[in-house]
Length: 347
Image 1 (cartoon, rainbow, N blue to C red):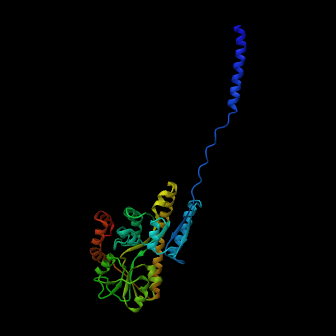
Image 2 (cartoon, rainbow, N blue to C red; image 1 turned 90 degrees about the horizontal axis):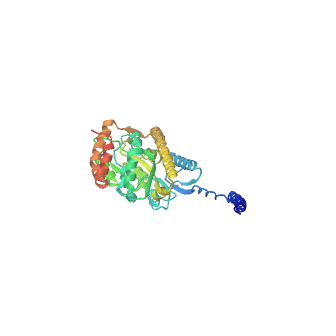
Image 3 (cartoon, one colour; image 1 turned 180 degrees about the vertical axis):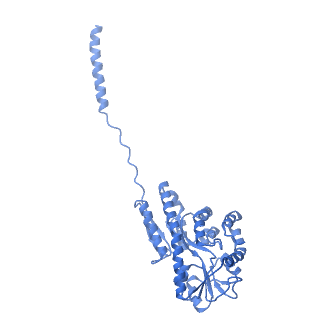
């Protein structure tokens, strides 16, 4: 009896095992992993003041092309030149509020407060080369550190203008300084103090009215102008251009900080790299262009007057004594100590 049961039981077990194997072999395959999400695409707006033809316009076009190429076409930027999105103050406000993605312009103290003055310190650098070195390292880091306390900006790059010149219809000795000369300056107290320390009587006149004021003799000169302005805006109404170098001027490339932080790490790294490379290339191009402007001015009949090293140091020493204490008070000693440590030596 047992033998018969075994004879029945064993084949049944074998059959059941074969059925189980067959069922297992025909089981549905595991579901395929979900496809990776497609990389995000973006459409951004970039506004800035320069129009065509100009080096700044061309460089902005180049920046747009590079970002689109580096992102494999995922980031498309529409370039609005000539302040089509508003003046630099309105654009900086719009970027901070997230209503505009990018802008390039001079920093406004009315938007960023005293932190904007970090890039407008008088007689900080003695050459555009040194400005290039400083701005690409410690100065941008310091501006980011201070500005982000009060405003939603990300500093991505810099378009330099010049070591500024002072334009005049009267000839004067830089040291000990002019006598009874009316100089138009920006309405910033620190700039007024700087030029008053150099011997000028400062006046504030709206920017669009400056060429006419020079032509009519309402003012004798204008301070802290770029060489671009000297050639394109003032060449018909000035006789002298002093290579005073009282300030290194430039326009900051700003992005909305929240937008930047929302990007993937790969996109943040790409933007940072592209903008740093773009910035580094701007300096030699602008230096060469400024040399062209100076030659064109001289050929046009404007006398270019270059300060000696000793004259520049004497001007810097006088101007710093008047301007820097005010900046130190507004920025704070800790911040201004960083700036002071980077300044060129005058003693």
